[in-house]
Picture 1 (cartoon, rainbow, N blue to C red):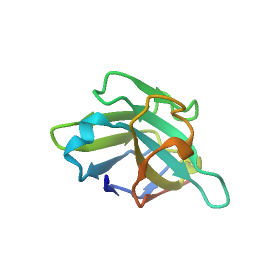
Picture 2: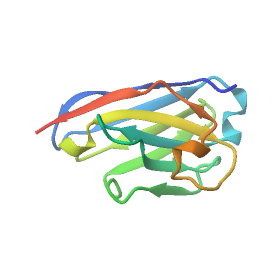
Picture 3: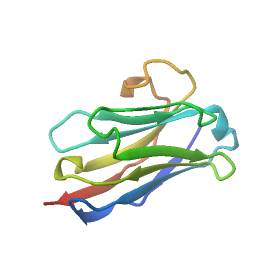
Picture 4: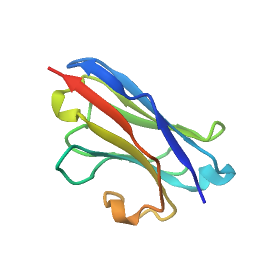
Length: 124
């Protein structure tokens, strides 16, 4: 069982930056691919970014490409989401998630473990 705890959310203005962190309890963290998702009120949970177990491959949603960067530090059992040039439409609860298989990366249902989420609010 992998426990994930997100942090770093908050209230910022449009154009600002935030860095989210997700700390994992499991020593085998490095064997999991890690994703970030977000969910705005009244909307479905959507894919934001994913990183492979060794950090060698990343994918992003078109809506965040060029603004967000996912990274990981396996020595610290932590995955990060650097968010730059934030927009009001980025407002959501952000979740990190872990999965073993490198497949169907954009689908929330395929992830094995989830954090509790951290709120990001971007004012205009």
